Image (tube, rainbow over all chains, first blue to last red; front, side, top):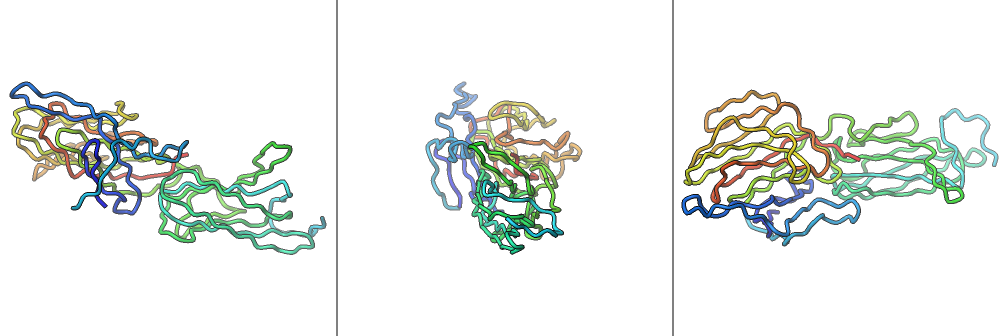
Length: 72
Length: 267
């Protein structure tokens, strides 16, 4: 199934083609604005998602803003 | 207890204070089957069997199995259900004694990677560390980030990756700027190994970057750009592999993210 992270808007497939689980993690942020009008800037993502398992809790490190299934 | 006086097998004496501790880590959904034999009083052989269901999260699953008092002559682990390759399920069987509330590991019966054709056995089996062998070769399709964002991939919890290759495509917008791409590994959002592309990518270009072990730097047809890895980057658990693009613009877009790696369970 394909998902879109609701924090960073990245898309990914989980599970992988080899049927193993995929663990998404958000980048730090993204570039917004333009060089032309000098509005280009780095905007950090707040509430980043990290799907890796925490060995102490047995749950994912951080849910972030969740994920949604997408078609395609 | 009268045990037989002539026993040809190698074994471990088991008392009522002892039990088996079955520790397993798996990157695939599967069921393990453990079985063995204990010679009890008057030389009677008692068959033992238990199962352990594993999910593919690589977290530790611990099972215990109480044995009858006697001589444990044989214990084995095999894949009961699930398509498992070497490097994907790591198992360790301990014989543990609890006396006066003190827990003592009397013996490690076996440790290693069972697969479709290989069982782990006691006695005469092996004690492999989790980073032994060739690992499982994997092809991981990564996250396609939103425009203006970098690629960040992470080695999963309790996994060890030895990266063989990393591929991604950068499509640049019409914004006039030089994009200088590097691939970096490190602790979450920290930098350690940095592998730069020797070329600059201009506006409105599509370029496919292939970081590959033992491949020379060259630009191939169709804007394929091969970049040399100095060695196999080894990533312990939860270490990132990420791009850093100097001059990245808001409408630049990374896509077709693909990692080839050998993977082990690392504990």
